[in-house]
Length: 418
Image (cartoon, rainbow, N blue to C red; front, top):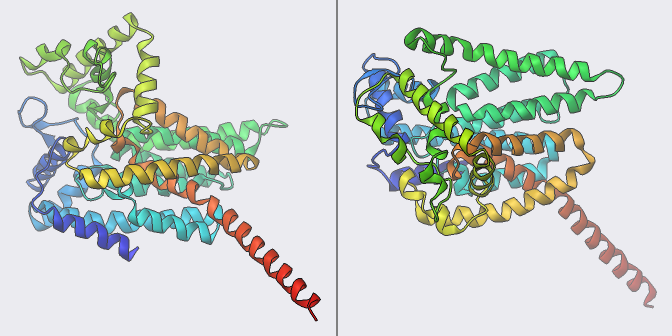
């Protein structure tokens, strides 16, 4: 963990003076407003300062806290993130791996997460994934392979609600939670009712956590916006520009040619949301197979990086990351992905653990169908590492058995020699 934190801090120091880009810029802007007493204000999308729905509240609140205490010093906040988020992710990864697969797998997993660039590159940039990653591992720690109780179901629901207020795509966690409760309680002799009850409890508790923010949005706009304007992302995928791109088919784009007229005159957040969602729905209604194509290109190839390295590297400039570290991370990821698939196969005799993991993977692919790239997978990277390292104890046991067999054979030969 010390080595991992040192690597993260070294990256912050080497890249000091970093200029925020894209989502970083929005978090930076909202945090400055918070430091000046204007909570959750923004100038997006038309450059007009106003109380905004653009982002979920918790990560701007985190950055705004440090801007309030120490002034607007981005490198300082990135250094704090590197220490706090880095240490939290590594320690929680160790705990998850130790509980599921034992101490040897835990030692291997924490060592990999300390070095693996995809596990920490967003901790040292101003992205909500830095906070979402340890929070996601904490949620996994609380329900994977755990006994199903009402108290635990309610607690997990609270944590999922908090995760949603950091990153709305954390919705995929509920799929794993529901499957875990059903797998833990069983489906025979009417016990499925208990699994259903625990699932409803977790979902209801998560909704209660989000509800005050949803009410704030309704009071502000008069419309139903569950968390943020990020739920309009379908407009950037379901359009002719994305569908007909020969190089990057169905890749999300911020300003499709179809929607450029909406930028000519300022609209309220809720009016813009309604217009963009209506256009996305109309496109899907006229091109229903587009959902399948978008799922293939975004939910599978982009989200899981089963694509050319050049396409992965094309995202680097838009996220202000290092191309070299992305290359290193990509090579490590492909090795870890193969090892994780082997680990999943070895879990076929542990359905209480296997089924929630499969549900998490499928649900994550579905959730990111409207927009996907490497950054969206960041909260799942520690889980990929843990499942990949689950093979280590079996390999070590096999190696010890072979070594013991060789030693016993050597002893028998020595005893036979006069």
